[in-house]
Length: 183
Image (tube, rainbow, N blue to C red):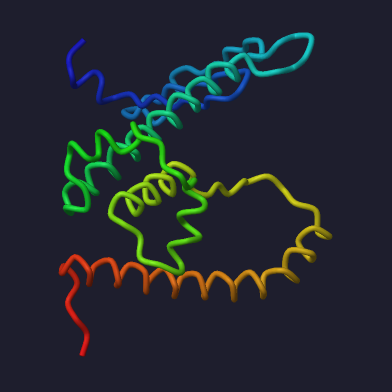
């Protein structure tokens, strides 16, 4: 069939969950040449009604989540090395030796004192590994009202922690000579 014969027709598809509808239009005559519907069974377990694609979707979601976490950890490690916070050998040996404080304790201590480069790297890696998660599930209206009451105090604490974190970062940069001094 040559290309001029194909240009005379237009195919329209309507793809649904349990059917595919189609129509072929003859453009030269301006009429419907043919049409039809193909019905098929729904892709679900007959007894439970669960989707047949659910196990594949969950496995794909897990693979993507793990791949993104692995990439994030690789990125943060290379960022620490590229900015000269730690050398590559120090980065490779960072978690070989036990540290007396947990990352949570280091994060709390970092608000009051200047962390060493090794401790700072542990904190950054810990934050990248345990970043926040926002669920998309629905919440009851009463729970939302309770959360709104707490938000004011949480917001104030967050502002205070953010300011302390900035001060900690400036102190670290000033001690290493990489941050411009402020007048």
